[in-house]
Length: 210
Ligand code: HEC
Image (cartoon, rainbow, N blue to C red; front, side, top):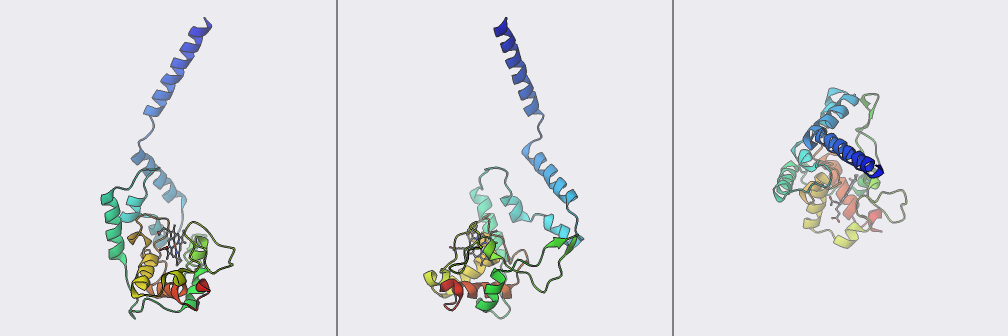
């Protein structure tokens, strides 16, 4: 009697689970629903609402769960990243390390409060959020690798300057879909600001290399 009751309960429960699963929306529908919810919950000026529109690379990189990036997709992200790079009008990829130092620790700009972007002279870069910078700084993140001694370890060759510039402009050119933001390609930093970041990482005088 007892056994048959357990059997009945188990099979009913299994039936419910199977029926429940069968009615879940598929991944694509779930994604569309989630994106719609975000769009509807976020209020800002039309220019800022544009930020919610994913470009082609971001769509490729926004995979659900642990879905793997295919070789073709990775190649497309790299190709789009390469095409996105702009260089400073002066042609100089390395600027003023002092300006870079300030920007690396500055998180202002592009922040939205009450539906408006804060008034600000220029956007900060806030590399500090994700990277260790000058030796001894304790208020730093570890999402990205430590950049302490970056220039000391790599030198100042033309190839390193170019790599560092492009890496900051669009990190996905060298590591598709990484967690490093595409600071130049998204328009957050200007080419001149990125050149300052390059100087900050590579100049022997910079605190990073002390
Ligand atoms: C949201 C976190 C985040 C921010 C902000 C960020 N990075 Fe990164 N960065 C990463 C991650 C993660 C990696 C490793 C993956 C990769 O290479 O793309 C990385 C890699 C790098 C590398 C390559 C290191 C190497 O060994 O070749 C450089 C250079 C770099 N970041 C510089 C910067 C600079 C300069 C800034 C600020 C302008 C910055 N990053 C802002 C997350 C971040």
